[in-house]
Amino acid sequence: MWLGFDYFFRGGAMKKILISGGAGYIGSHTVQALAEAGYGPVVLDSLISGHRKAVGESIPFYQGDIADAGLVTDIIKKEEVRAVIHFAARSLVGESVQKPDLYFEENTAKTNRFVSTLLQCGVNTIVFSSTAATYGNPEEIPIPEESHTEPINPYGASKLMIEQSFYWLEQAYGLKWMALRYFNAAGAAWDGSLGEDHTTETHLIPLVLKTVLEQREAISIFGTDYKTPDGTCVRDYIHVLDLAEAHIRALEALEQGIPCGAYNVGTGTGYSVREVIAMAGKVTGLDIPVLEAPRREGDPDRLVAKVEKIQRRLGWQARYSDLETIIKTAWQWHQKHPHGYGD
Ligand code: UFG
Image 1 (cartoon, rainbow, N blue to C red):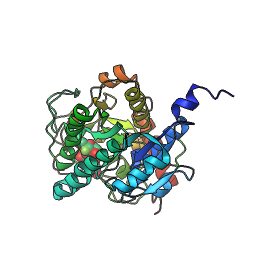
Image 2 (cartoon, protein in one colour; image 1 turned 180 degrees about the vertical axis):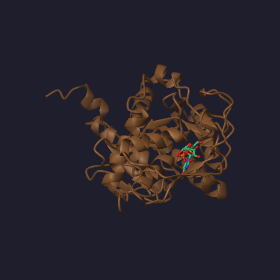
Image 3 (cartoon, rainbow, N blue to C red; image 1 turned 135 degrees about the vertical axis):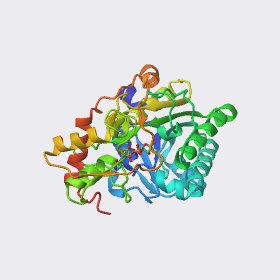
Image 4 (cartoon, rainbow, N blue to C red; image 1 turned 90 degrees about the vertical axis):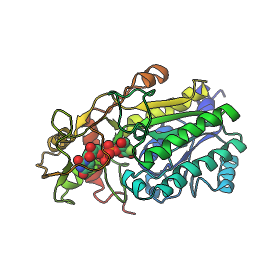
C-alpha cells in the first residue's frame, strides 16, 4: 500500500524533529502544531521553567539538559532525529541584567555545546528561537532584519551571539540554520489547553488578565511619557499559534535549501500598553484597575517588525494575531487555568 508523500516526508516513516524547550510556552504550542501537521516531535526539556503537562502523553519526552552530550546523542540515535527546533533558554530580560554570566552560560555556551553534539551526530538543520531584543534600541521602525543589532541587555546579547556562531558553523560545517526573531509572543491554544505560565510573570498581557482575575490589585503602566501617540510603549504582538506555524515553515524551507539567516516574526502593526489594556477590558467585559508607574529600565519606545522577508521567502503571514484574538485566547487559558499548569 502506498502511504503517500506526506507520510514519508513529514515523519510517518522518516526521522523525527527534536524540540529543545518543548515544554515551554512557545515550544509547547509548536510541538502541538508539529504533531497536528503529521511530523514526529520529540521533546527535550529540563523542566526548570517548562511544564510536563504542556506536552501530550503520546509525545516522546526526555527530561534533561541540552549540554548533556550523552543524552542528546542517545535521543538522536533512538528517535532518529533529522532536524532540531531549539527553544531551550533563559528569557527574563531583568534577570539577565542581574546575572549576565548565567545567560551567557545557559543560552550561548550551552547552545554551542548542543549544536556541536548535533553536528557530530550528523544533524545539521536547526531552527532557532531568537528575539527582537537583538536589535536593542532600533534606529528605524518597522525594523528590517539588516538593521543594526546592538542589544541593550545580556538576554538579547546572548541570543545574538548564538546567531553569529551559527553563521560561522555554516561556513565551517554546513550548518543549515534559521533564527526567528520574535517580537511579543502572546495568546494561547484555541481550546485553552496550552498557554502562558511563567513562575516569574513579567509580560503585559498575562499580568493584565491576572488583574482581571483579581490575583493582582492593578496593572501598572510602566511609563506614560514615551514618544508614542498615547505616551505608552508600542509593541508588535504575535499570536503563539502564528509563531508555531512560522517554525514549521522555517524547517520546511531549510530542508528545501532556502538560504540561512535571521527572520523577523511579527505582524508589522504595533499596539500601545493602553490599547492592550483597553482591549482586555472589552474582551473580559470588566473594568481593569490601572496604576501609572515610572518607566521600566531598558524599554524602547516602539518595537515593530518589518515582515516582508519572512512573507516573501517563507510564504508565512500572521493569521491569528489581531489583538482581539490574541487576548480572547489568552483570556480563555487564564479562566480555565487561573493558576497555570498547577505544577
Ligand atoms: N508593561 C507594563 N506593565 C507591566 C508589564 C509590561 O506597562 O506590568 C509594558 C512594558 O513596559 C512594555 C510592554 O508592556 O512596554 C510589553 O512588555 P512585556 O514585558 O510584555 O514585553 P517586552 O516588550 O518587554 O518583551 C518582549 C519579549 C522579550 C524580549 C523583548 C525585546 O517578551 O523576550 O520583547 O525587547 F526580549
